[in-house]
Length: 504
Image (cartoon, rainbow, N blue to C red; front, top):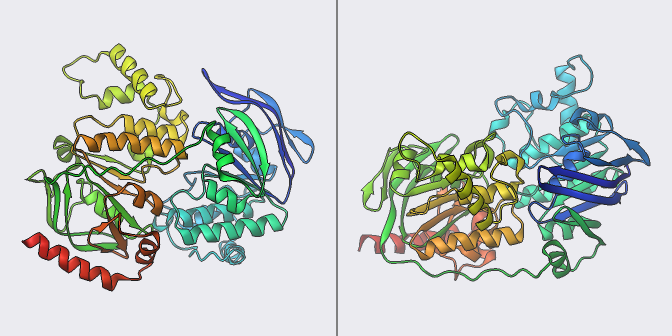
């Protein structure tokens, strides 16, 4: 399917998301759409997939103008979109999710559908159990389900919006292999990303957007520096490591045993110093999220102690942890971190330390929202609802809502979905807090991010937790080996030394 955009324009109030966009994508190709957060990538793809209507302009499929008024319309034209957050129903089984949205009014034969599902996934090397429940799947497996569902519904063009965010390296390899097979079959693949490495490996051609405008198109092979300059209008460099940890202990885990089916973690002992940054590394589902949530009162430990600045908070709820200077920034921004339907100003009103008494000074919080929007470079307005922001701007907004007087911040995938500049900016803000004594405890699937910003690292493998590893002396290869389950004998030697030092 050949796709052409002609003079596409789309605005959300005063924000111009797409400005006179003109380019075309040929059938049988993997075409990249690059751009910083808020560049208009997702907006354009939502126009193509029927979630938004353009203010003006045309879409042509195989040379013919079409009007796509809904996602159902899009799939009729053979266009399917895989979103950053998979559109599925976790309480239902895989096969039930697979059937959702099927053409026609009759329910297909259950046995035949399972057969078709298994036959289809075999072509791509997927191994999903059709009887399993979706809430047991990893992000990568949920993506696989959505790809299979869209293909079964007749998609000839697939749009993937930041598909490698939050999936493992093995799942990414499977995804890329599947996309190459689809392109060879004549399907049109549109790969939306801010990750240069992924685009360079996969895409034959790329369009670069900046602030809603098409900056240009480039064919492979690419020059990374050129792509970065086109995306941001300048050269971007990584920030330096902060070595600001202080000797006083602000957080301690003693013999922690925590369980959340099917994950079980035992005998975790760890001390966190003021101003220190600790990275949690491991394959998705290895227990990092379970431990992190136990550290902030969202999961109750079965045994052991959680000590915050000398105070035992074991078994206390998240509200008690917040009162003691601990805050948590989850990965699922709209499900747990922000409130859909509320504006930025309303979020600052809810989160405000200044909110006291019976009356709320709405004008004050509007002004505060505008100030924080400017300080954190959020592309939006104080009256913008959080769901109207791009993923990267939602993350900036969530960070801006954190209170100033915090001892510890726990973060799940703090730069997931962020472009390079936004990720560096966010870490700059976090390191400013570290300089004032705030400690950071964070999960990331990006090993280079773990090594770049951590003082020490905890590695997770199948519920096992390593002793703290010095980030400066740990190589990317060593970290990758440990995450894959290799080299743990050497880790136990480090554990013995750590525990003997802890007792002395």
